[in-house]
Image (spheres, rainbow, N blue to C red):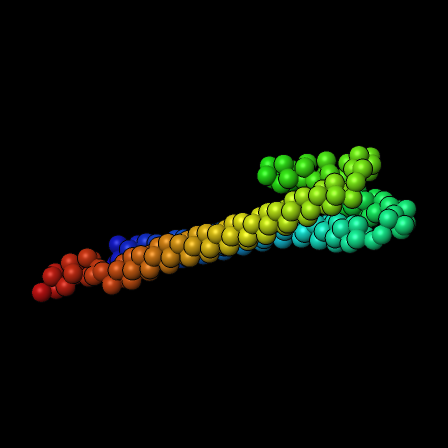
Length: 215
């Protein structure tokens, strides 16, 4: 009788330990899932911030500089008599472009972007220093600037796509990790449940001994 009571107590104790382990596994899985969600959220915020500060703003600066250079080209079609007023207007446009260039430099530039933008700055310097002494040379440099701005715009699109692809890969990786941890936790819980049920259904050896003694 005493052995049966001890055996029953052992089963209850084992069940309690297994139940505690189940709770621990569930809690651990909850912690892991929260960590994965938080990490993905932080990465998503960083990607959005980078996309806005280094790509969308840069694209906006490029579009404004493109507009200004097109206006400079249009001003070259006026007659020589209006040349002085055109020069004053172009000087104001170049000054605006310089401000945009300084803002553009505050964004994060790739190596390819730095090369193209350095060429663009050289053209702006030439306009500011009045080294272009003819309409043809001004028009040629304005065309070069527009080509460079188009290439810089393409770089922004490429980098934006790269950022979004990286964010998507990170999201899928986090989702896969969560699914894997959930599957492992479920398997462990099923194993523990099977052990508990097995312990409860095992025959009591003391009962068999008592039954044989009676017989």
